[in-house]
Amino acid sequence: MGNPGISKYAKYLLLLMLICSAVYFYLTGERKISLGGSHLRIMNTLFRLNILGYPNENSLPDEMAAELRALDQKLSRFIPASEISEINRNAGRSPVPVSIETFSVIETALMISELTAGAFDITVGSLVDAWRITPLAEGGGEREWEPPAPSTIDQARALTGHGKVILDHERNSVLLPPAGMSLDLGGIAKGYALDIVADRLHSHGVSSFLAELGGNIFAGGRNRKGQPWKIGILHPRRPTDIIAWIEVTDASVSTSGDYENYRTFRGERFNHIIDPRTGMTAKTLVSVTIISPSATLADALSTAAFVLGPEEGLKLIENRPDADGIFIDSDIKITVTSRLQGKLHLK
Ligand code: AMP
Ligand code: MG
Image (cartoon, rainbow, N blue to C red):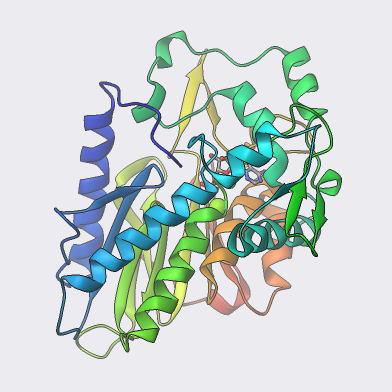
């Protein structure tokens, strides 16, 4: 989230995103609606919206763009004036009263930590900072990158723990008791934003649409032919290709992959998803896609299942009535939850 700076890598990232988007819109067979250009750059990624059957195409995307910008202004830890930055600055000092919206995203995230035995944990901010695996477009410097020292990881890990966050429901305030602790909503905020977009579209009477934000998609209703939307899953080792596709209606599809943001050091790949239990980057899977009617849940659970790995992750999703999952391991072996058996189309 946020946009601390543009490096020479920005154009490559943008190109990759545009190729992915082209594949995605080719698969959907639908036209895209312009948002002040061909896309809107927000939350450190691209937002695209494709609406069917709405007469006034221009004002609605503008409204969405304004809404997403306002959300980023509250939830980004990279925007100094955001509520999340304010909470982080006051760690170890004082509770920070926040908007109902920010409070409820934090509350939901903490609830998902409970559901996932801490695999999903928004208090990973200090570990995220220690690993410095930002999108290449932001920091560049891949050649100079090296993993943090074990002592740095230990120090950062001491500043994490979802159970330490203190919420005051009367004042809507948030306190991070240890100084140096910090919240990072990067694993859930895009999903939350997509739920907001879907709500707004529904309240405008728009039921058929595709909204995409980073690796998260919300597929509302059906396509022009009255069929479910076809959503492609990117190949984790050839991310400009699609490895498989599924049909969805009124659901979100969120992917956490080790090919999104990563660094390599001495031939080893380190990605941006951290196992809060060890402080190390999660390694057992290369891609997890979650399908759920809630984009917030799909986003958080894809991050959590990525951390939990093939067995525990699959068990977590299998036991939920509101989510299905597609797991890809480093041998590019694909496993799906039982309700998806026979419904994943390989390319
Ligand atoms: P996603 O791409 O949705 O899986 O989210 C990854 C982002 O979430 C990272 O860039 C971090 O900002 C944050 N993150 C990393 N590890 C975790 C974790 N275990 N729980 C929650 N958020 C995390
Ligand atoms: Mg996520």
